Amino acid sequence: MTTTQFTLFVKQACPTCALIEPVVQQLQQQYPGQVQVFVQDDPAFPSVAEQRIDDTSLASSFQNQIEVVPTLIRHNGAGDEMSRTYGWDQQAWIELTEIANLGSDLPAFKPGCGSMTLDPGMEEQLLLRFGKANLSAREIATADAEDEMEACYERGWTDGLPVVPPTPLRVLKMLRASRLDAQHVIGYIPPDNNPCTVEKVAINAVMAGCKPDYFTAVLASVRAALQDKFCMHGLLCTTYFSAPVMIVSGPACRAIGMNSGINALGQGNRANATIGRALQLLIRNIGGGIPGGIDRATMGNPGKYTYCFAEDETDSDWPTLAMDRGYSREESVISLFAGEGLQPIMDQLSRTPESLAKSMASSLRSVAHVKRFGMADAILLVCPEHRKLLREAGWEKKQLKQAIFDELMIPGAKLLEGVDGMAEGMPERLKDKQLNKFRDDGLHIVTTGGTAGKFSAIISGWVASGERGSQLVSELIQ
Amino acid sequence: MSGILLLDPTAEVNPAERQLLPRLKSLAGATVGLLDISKPRGKEFLDEVEQQLTDQGAAVKRYNKPTFTRIAPLELNQKISTECDAVIEALAD
Image 1 (cartoon, rainbow over the protein chains, first blue to last red):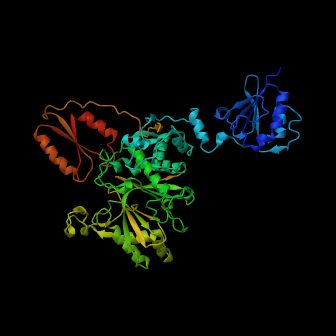
Image 2 (image 1 turned 30 degrees about the vertical axis):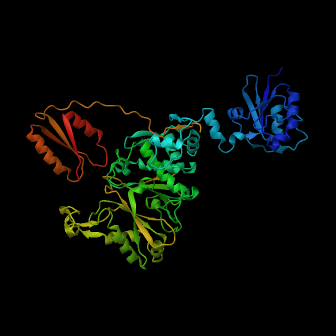
Image 3 (image 1 turned 30 degrees about the horizontal axis):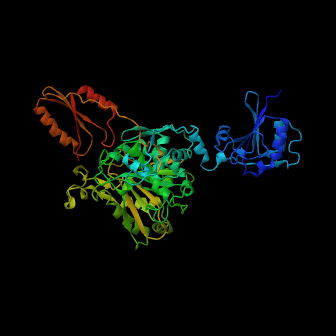
């Protein structure tokens, strides 16, 4: 007496499953009592099946890792799987069943359909239902009558705006957008230096409103923030305005739909808005960086909710910020800068690069204070119209930067404390030096924004820029 | 409305509560560390503090943090804790 068993997984909505009904009959005749048919959608299908098992819960389909229906599995007497085939492939079915004339009236081949376990969103639900999700964060059950949005507020998890409630399903979908293990520790988040797993990043990304597509960018932003050069601890604690400003470039920007055009630094784009917000929520919730607690900013700035935008890359001869830092145009990169605010440079009359550079330099002198030099870095946002003027005159970034540096090389004696009736300024010991407004690596040039408007801008940096504080950092998005 | 499950976005840590060391009863004969965190004019501020401590009979040791933007190196913390009975950390601008 043979002990072979067959299990067949089908769904009524699959034409191939309907096609093979005669095959099921043949199989049952050859192996009476040894054929079980699991059906994913209609428990009455297929009518010819003698042992039909309702798998509308998809439990057996999930446990058997069914990807296609029909799938036929042959087991030995001990119940171990010996082999399987899927779709209708007559030759493969004949080899599996050892029935020489199996399905001889049918076409030799017809592909199957996707298993319902792989329907959009279903896989994550099944992983959760069967405890295979590898989540370890504490689960908090809200009360029946509790509003989950308010529950997030009451627990102190938000930045003041509503957050998306971090349900296990949403978090799992986020996690599956990365190849990293959920429990991998990505780093220690200041100011409390608490360990942060990929799962915790995912929870905060969900709350920020991120789509799973954005998760690799969020992870890259966290890695960047944790670089020692960025000095996230000091940045969070400072009384100054600054916070992380994120600049993104490369193919990932287009892939996830970031805005580098009209209103690039403004509202209205989900990726721009939520990627920047995720890091801020993480610093709050994992790092313990709470305003009024260890975040002692005198005023702060609205960019502390989120400050993230993409670079305009429509001019292939104008390098991105990432390329200035040694990356290639094909690489997707997120850079973090400790900065704040936006100071416009309106110049509608310049028709030469020399004039425009003077305008920009004069405005840049106001970063932190007009008489404070070498203190704060800055990002110069060159609008597309201004870039066009520069490019048509044959100027590249390095010429613009040099012209600005030349313009902002000032004798120390003119910047000293007390000069021009202002107590603020540079110390007396620098009176005989020529001082530059910016460190050699302290001025970054980036293009973003819409094509109309001769409006460039300045993002001022933290007054603790450079090695003693924060430097611009970059990470690959991968 | 029925309740839902949320995952905790916080670090889920309970920091250890530490007892303060016994306060000094007198400054006379005590060694007090003064930590300059490298803020502008921190030195001038601490010079004044040092003078007042010395007047009250304390011995003073001076220390410097490399930059105010980062936490003090562990070695510096350990050095101060082994060499001093008390420490004053200065902020200035």
